[in-house]
Image (tube, rainbow, N blue to C red; front, side, top):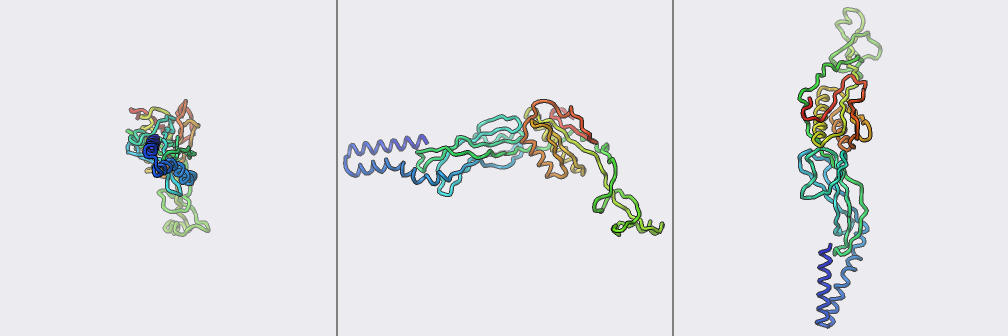
Length: 308
């Protein structure tokens, strides 16, 4: 905007010199037009300026290590007036703040949530000579999602034994069954006809499903960026591993707001849980390993490079 003002002052000064040197009505008319242009521009720009809105835009999520960028997006019902501003980036976990540079793009070398905030936004008239501050909108969060980090020695799930068995809701296929006498309302498809013929009583093969205890993945949200990359990568890998084994589980993570509990029964819930932790604040002190939970199976996610 400074450049435009200097250009306008140079033009106005030139017209003034032209009027002094020439001294005719034409030079006077040119000088009046040049002096009136800023006010005419301001008058024509006011409706667009009053209806102007701006916000930070960009992708909702980016995979760690890939390129990503954000930008300022202005909108108005009338022709868009010129505007300018800056973007501020804040790491959700660590609270680190930095200025966004378009030439560098988003910092995606480490996973985490990044709050993108527009600041020092000013909208100008169409000539760019007058500037007005713009009310800022809420921050946009961009997720830098982790990549899976395999655990060198996956835990043995054989120790994860069902505490009891219960009838499978809705029936259907099951590896284990329990024999019982027929009751009115039971499905005829479950009748064991050969055994019923031998005993003389209608006998059913009722499908049973295991009733397991609590399965936990625990993690303390604290550490260097490299350690957090390993923690989130191992959490993603272990969660996918358990889901492949058809094991539902719960993630419990110690954050700056206390312990967060996130149940997971399907891949979408795992992604949602990890996204929520990417936007949480780091725990200031303590470790979740110091807390005892009544779980039938528990695995702690650490961030050491040589951790097994």
